[in-house]
Image 1: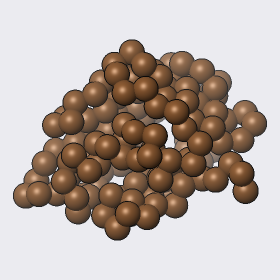
Image 2 (image 1 turned 30 degrees about the vertical axis):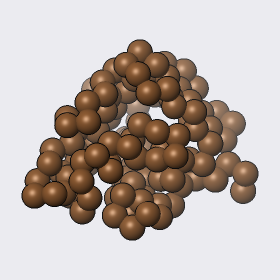
Image 3 (image 1 turned 90 degrees about the vertical axis):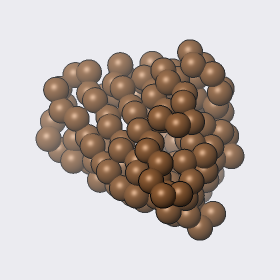
Image 4 (image 1 turned 180 degrees about the horizontal axis):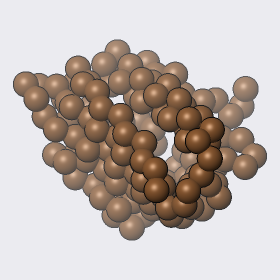
Length: 142
């Protein structure tokens, strides 16, 4: 199976990045404006984009010092059972972030390319939100 991996440095404390990955306010400021997040392992995060792409993630890990884990349990067939990790590591008041998406089923190279491209965009949005307070999330309302 294929894996998408991105690594980058965020010029913000890990606690700032962690809140951006775990709260409604944080997630809605870098990925999509419409989100409902439960903040407990076993809980769900419901993301609303457009028809056919509204992933529901089950939270598999929540550790402010180490990161966040999700498993896609509904809302987008091509991501069914995929796992997602946002691994955080503190470095001199900043955060090294490693993002990993592991696919449960084989998809076309074009699908992987599209998802990898989109993750690059939204992870940069996460970085901008954590560093400057303004990301570029999807707005399902237009």
